[in-house]
Image 1 (tube, rainbow, N blue to C red):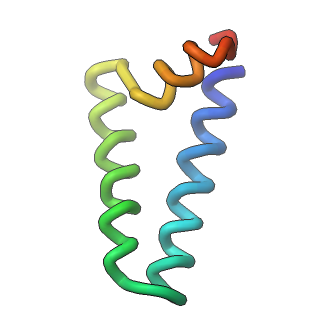
Image 2 (spheres, rainbow, N blue to C red):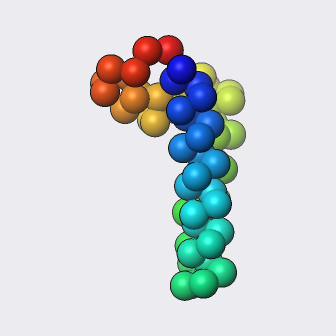
Length: 61
């Protein structure tokens, strides 16, 4: 369940930041880059801050 929520959150944040970059300010692309970098580092380290937060909220892996 946690992996599904995590993928949904990542997709939502990427799409939201792209929409904000198109309609508001291009600096929102930095947030897109942050999400991508976080996904990349979690692939190598097997640690993700969002998974830690979801775990504290009681979401089961």
